[in-house]
Image (cartoon, rainbow, N blue to C red; front, side, top):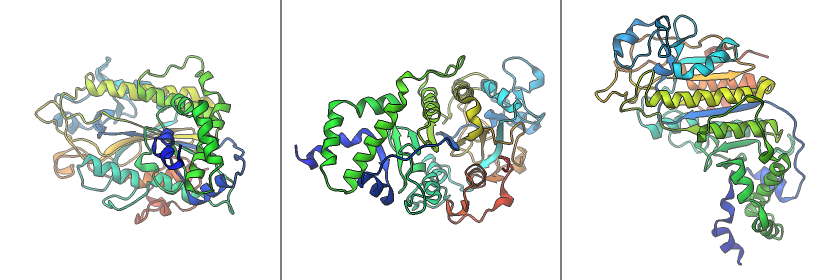
Length: 421
């Protein structure tokens, strides 16, 4: 078979990779895989579709919340029962479907962030997700994602840093997400089993042989890098993985993605950045309150995260989990029992270094005169302030401003979400 025809046949579609020139050269010249040591890990979880922040982190201490949402509001904790919010600090509470996260808050490792998001006024899902993943609100021409820029700033030059693991950045997705697109290496895969099975067997051996006889060009290097990753994953024997005793992940696709992220972390394959997303948050119709479609999604979301934290155990001292959604939803419900595209939203930060046990951010209020454009929760924290703080305090990134071009924010805008080390 001709090499060009073989490539076009889809043999290279086993894994999506973005590779920097330096990374390619290391592979092409046949250098051994780097030694991998236990290090810091950032897990980014994207709620695609604009999750309703006012149901996730319930402002039960703001009377305007109940006035604006007579049918959708979550009951005050003082009411009691399974339909009431889980109180956090007397002002805010968790949706009852997120009760699995309450112990993490009490243990001081979970920090909700309120009134946070993009300064862009867009109400387009596509644009808002693009801005949050590129880290450049209202700039559509940005070619790479902010996580990829972090990886580049952290170093890929073989003259100044050691070679990196092929599993340095992993997205549990069918293709590389916007946030990880760029010149630095990243792997995207639907599952560990799919990665090893589809890349294994005699066809993979023939593919490897084909690349070993080729010249040291981009195609050769990307193929060789794939096989390095396969070999490392096989050595970790993911098919034999069992979570910690008593830990049970939801059987949903999202729950299984988080289970496999835990596998990669505990296998010590050099994972530094992990990404997973989950859709279905665009609740225009029949959103529900304590029960309903939103509650079902929140229960799966919270249970999966709680299982991940329990599974990692003491490894959470090196891990930060950061949740995000492109924007929030309207304060008042629409005529279909749902909510429409809004503005500011909510995030969760979870980890051993997280200053948890309290709600972060400045609450703008929900009275009509306090709303953004008279309809939405107003923004008081730019998402780049959160991302910059995480990079600086978790990874000790020397210059987070290089990751967010055009952003004038500095440490004075941080919310103290992570403790300084």
